[in-house]
Image 1 (cartoon, rainbow, N blue to C red):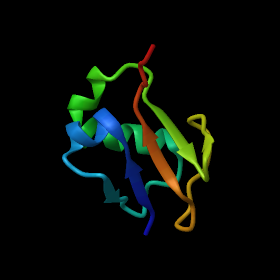
Image 2 (cartoon, rainbow, N blue to C red):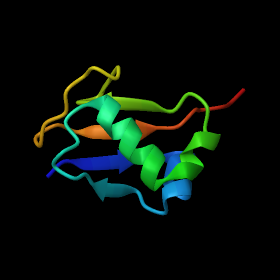
Image 3 (tube, helix red, strand yellow):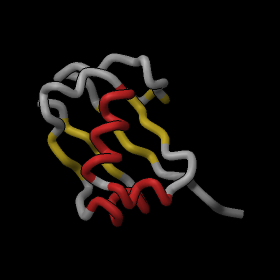
Amino acid sequence: MTKLLVFGAASEVMGARNISLPPEIDSVKKLRVFLQQHYPGLKRLNSLMVAVNREYAEDACPISGSDEVALIPPVSGG
């Protein structure tokens, strides 16, 4: 089962620093749809990025059970 690591403001919205993904989540696009359905508060975060195996990933990127998947919120700073 793939585990999603969640950082910063995204973890505050989701109430967790990691979650287990259902097995049908096999792409970044499906992950985004899953997150929108289960965590609608994430829509408030602009430019939310997904990383697969420590590389930013586009929607077409596949996800397998052995991948490290992370949800990375926008970062601000000066």
